[in-house]
Length: 511
Image (cartoon, rainbow, N blue to C red; front, side, top):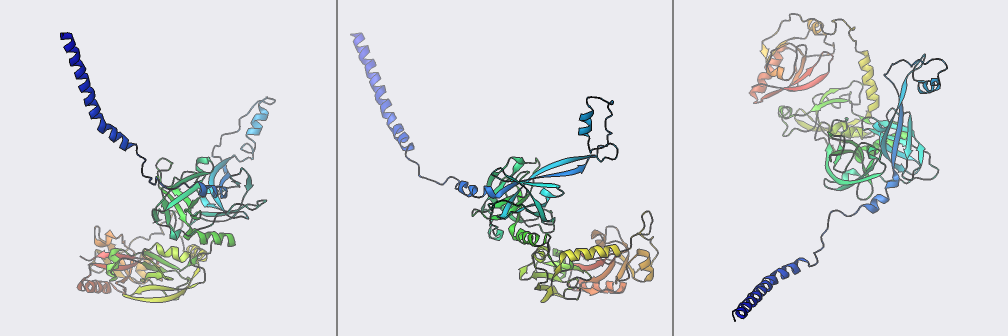
């Protein structure tokens, strides 16, 4: 009886436990059922670029170069006993590398990338990929190889154009307009990283208009698409398959990609490539001015609302505007309809303009905006002119003290802004070696830790203008400073000439 009751009790307990388990499991099963419902379709990252890449890979090439360089190792050729079995080995190994009358050389190989822009065999790459090369070989995606001829290079934008002679038309890619690209747009790079061959990477445009101090026309596209050593000269494509940049440089502490790569935009490269194809060299526009930035202090001194434009610090003799169309002290605000926001904008827009073109230039002179028309010269002619002028400048003999004449006691006025001033006459010209065509007031001494010393003004410099007014005597300088103070100005804008006549603008605190 007890056993029967005990068995019945345990059966009740088991039933209750089973019931409880069943009751508790119902919600769990319901949740599990909800979790395995079909998910709502969502986009997972960008669409595949496989079709796009397939149509472009054949137009991207690997470039291998070789260059013979002098070996600095001047160790003598090993001497072996006559008749030695190693004689032939040493003769072959050291042939042409040393010994009597020989010059020891070695061959250096390098790899890069490029791309075909014309089916007839025109290829674009970086100048640094082929610079100094004795032999250039193009390796195509199908395994074929062709020797390349150099058509032209441009060191300022690091571009080069090559030509091969194919037996049949090559696959070429179109040049797009980089100006249409926006930060965040998808791009694709194809190149030859570390010599691995055609490699595709994808990323976005991280920034535009980057200045990395690589040249005078820096305007790089920055991308996070992986770019490594060997990608130099390869194309950066938009999602239409158009080239919108030429991969040129990376920032990397390790030598590998960290997601900061730079490409020359086609808005800058297209004109250079066309000129190299046509002339074998560049034909850039030239204005013939020396410029400097418009800082906040300079803008205030010129009564400008905001610092912008390029301040003309000098006019090059024999240049396009030597006739007075533009004067020293003018601020160039627009060139041929394009705004000059920063100083570095001007050289780029001028260089992109055709030689001989008449353009409108908006300047600020004496606090007023005006438009002048100038006809551009050729930059390369201007560089030759500058070299010729430099060659005419007398140089002091090496090992003498003639370059810096000893200072002499000059009659000087009272101190103005930390400067002792003197009349620029024959004696002061001789003392400081100042050119005859420099006019103004000579600075005899600059007090340490003064406002003038802060701006690196030195004795022997000449004050040509203050606040766009010419200075003739030390009294002129003192009077002009007092005028500016009375006008509520905090800084004085000085045009300073060095002993050779090279001009620059500086602002000096008057407080």
